[in-house]
Image (tube, rainbow, N blue to C red; front, side, top):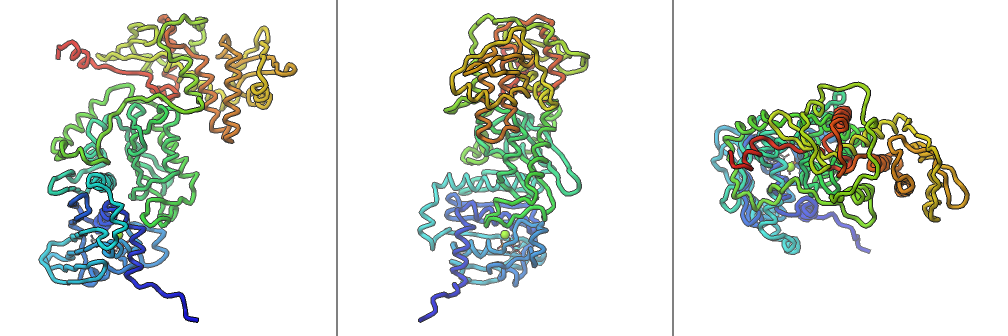
Length: 610
Ligand code: ADP
Ligand code: MG
């Protein structure tokens, strides 16, 4: 019998590799940009025609290549970036697999012009479908120009999958955006069919680059973050205040050791950092750089290097989540509008050369409208929905029971807190507290504010193991349906930890003997059943610890001042004092804002005085 196995020819191997690396024009842009950055370029020009389907040309002023290297760069597994497996775990470059150029060349008509000296004499190599056809010397400044024409000209099946020009351009612009964020010191220009779409000059830091790319007004709503954990774990970047959100996670840009990565663990950690600060279905704007010992992360998991594997996943996760929480916790931005920042930005962006009208087609870099909140949706009502259903209506309904004033008085005063320092003007529509802060008008949503206060207090008490229960004078008898009764008896111990003392009373009846102090006087039987149902829901998802917060939110929701409730000065003062004593006070636990500010200028504009 003949042998059946044969070693595939080099060209075919390259084409197979290209299947993984080169999916569309933007993948080519990505690989070539990485090479330019690895080559130390300070200026990079990306030129596209027909969304990159007809032409992709990248010109850089990096180190260039000599004649021999220029030839070698077309070979698969030819790289200047690593030489042993030890290097693989100490990567300092974006590339290392040595297969991008070979792969791209195998599915296009590729011309490489490169020069590694100041004499101005370089090499020009032309290849079709990976076969070198032509080699000449050319006059060229130090740097490299790679031209990729007719992508997939020899792979019709692949070519069919390419999308419209605008779509491919959008993907390519997205790739440029990511590289531009990671390298503020490098200038990037993106030209499409001879129109300049993006013109980013070299910047000193991330803020200036973010403002040039994503809009300078955005910067006012971003907070700087800088955290270090020992020598080899650090996180820096900008994260949005909870009021700035997007409807998709597409504005979460995360970089690991300078490389754009979309990682599940990192993504989860970021959302954990924003826990109870955002409305359902909303995502923050985040540009974060995680720096860690290259040995702690494996980037060689995926051909396009978009995924990584951490050695200590939990450690990295908690470090990131904690860093975000620490930045968001004090909610310091409430205290003063960021005048300085915007002035700083104005001066930075004076020389900005972005072409706003031409930016429109760039799907990836278009600014989305912000600050619109969409109500949560879903088949099974969640805690937040339950709370909203109950307390959302804006029509007047007399409160069943005025909340006793004592409940709001706290020991000790925090005279220098932000909220305490506000001048109280009064209450509007029995729902909003009106205050003056300097020349600004400040509105506080009393329900949202108190909900956050209640939640933070319960959370503290729960983690200290002492939610104070208050015995009821007459135990309340709960008559439940079969299901609710079963759920309740399954969760008696957890309920006790939450401050509810409940005794089975035979059959489907229970005696409620004590309840958390702050809930006394509320509609108790509904609450107990709600809490039990919530525990059941969590129990079946096996995450009691994590989700106990949801139960506490539910309880907070029951305990608080509602909208449509008259508050006197004493009650308002007490609420403001409490706000000063808690964390994350800018948003209610469902993510709605607690305060809004109107400047004098804005108000004067309303009256045409400006
Ligand atoms: P890798 O980036 O993984 O090393 P590539 O196939 O992308 O593999 O590139 C092969 C080699 O060609 C690189 O290691 C580098 O030495 C050289 N090279 C590619 N592009 C450039 C460039 N723009 N400037 C200088 N050298 C380059
Ligand atoms: Mg490369």
